[in-house]
Length: 217
Image (tube, rainbow, N blue to C red; front, top):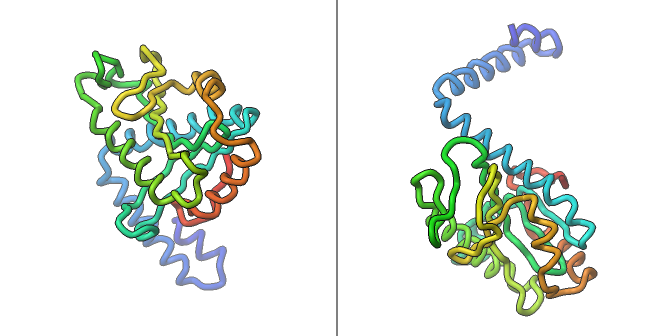
């Protein structure tokens, strides 16, 4: 049926046939996709969108947010690619934000100096994020002001997670509602003008993950 409709809307009948085949492939792919995978992808997307909304008020504190970017492979020899959900640039520095939507399912909790989700120790998650921030710092080094490095931040969407903000394994862990107080109290490492110019530079340097021009959220 989809192919028939598409065929009627174009001057070339074969377009409808191709469209029908494409629809069939998509449906087949969905049929073999595990529900758990779909649910996980949905939670990730929801977490990223919620973080983008939480970041918005920070623009009144001189911050600029870049979303859905990528440090491409080969940009700097020896530096692996880095997928960037959110990069926050402001007078307090440059921050690589990674979102985790743990509002449902196993409860996130701090046990001693470790972060757990249910009984799963997330030390690997924190170390990976810290390493990505280090790699991003190395790759962007010549564009960053002297002494400024990319700081990793894990944004947790959950009903509760205490104590936060918390610094573990090189990563700041916080809830989205803590953004204004946390970033507002940080020591400034550059002026608002310098931060704005740096954001413009990084906007050019880091392409969108999709390959299209990113939309500022």
